[in-house]
Length: 495
Image 1 (cartoon, rainbow, N blue to C red):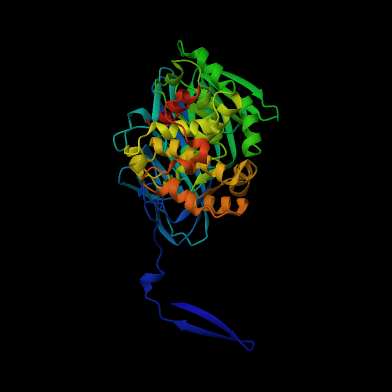
Image 2: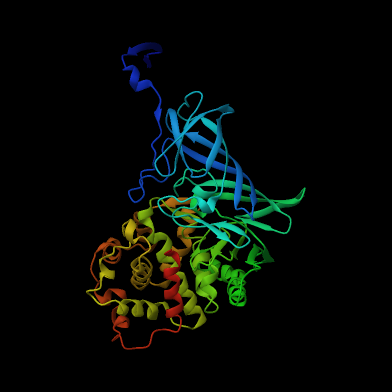
């Protein structure tokens, strides 16, 4: 039974409304977050505000033990809810009481609390678990990278399942405390600030803190034998970089690239505004892979990509993501252009600064690289589909979109948009349509047609829309010096 209270002329009358008993009963939270690209990713019925991860990892056996404490708030009455996770779980407690658990699907941990949760209730979840992450495959793959001296977790759009339970979707961002215990002689890394590091018997425990909201796929952890360097940017931001001691011939080029993190961060602040986090850096584990990922504050760089020499473009790309992708995260995965188009364009701007080719020249080169009948032009960067989420069109055509915008509204307003957007949406989530509206507000011009042409029409736009007469290249001019290196970065997100 439910009661409605009506106040009339100071008199309170209670009206009893007949409601079917089943409508008042708590229901399970959805097993997905409602993303059309990845229906099973994330979960419904609650929002996580904080993750506290207490881990112990043995590099020799790749065995991980953990206790994860999640602080959350229910968004509906809940009889049951799901977590995304793939390791073995020994127990789950909700609000201090043991919960019933079961599994379903490829990575769903179903949790039934001892008592239902009311809508709007703050609650805690404590999960105790263990496993060998490298031996666990979900849908035929693993996001845990076994190395000769340890392991690391990094992937996109998923990596959490192999090392901590989560509500694994970018729209549910949270703060993190990550505490890792490893044997003497090994190092551990994670996101954010290194709060403390102390002996723990024959082990060493490191405590890392991310005090700004972080998407679950942007959390990373790595254990191995690393050379760690520490410095600060000119604006005083701590820089922590790390390199596996097992790197081969690529060690020099990896350091020559990643050690420019502070310099690149200072320059990006002039383009995108103040750096959004309290520390910055990157690490190069001996994973034998060549891709890179913008794991928040501590970018992951596969060592293979440095085999052919230095690659500052990839550093620029991943650091640009700290503003576009990490601080301002996608609301749905179809909004991936807000990440990759802007990070690619940042590399074009770096090339312009370094005198290796202007953004306009790179846009024209990109345009001329794909004939009108190339399938490249059928992919819509504003909604590429899950099969094309990391297609060249999202990067190249995505960056061309920004150059077209720059030519349309002029440098002053264009760079005001680039700086203003992270300030407007920082530490939150956004859709492509939100950016279009923001660009229109700042520029004072109607821009829907421009964005529709470049992001959504599955055909090659007319070349003059890229910049009028300046865009009339014959396709025979040499590509800018930076083109090949920047182009290679695009592929670094496909793995």
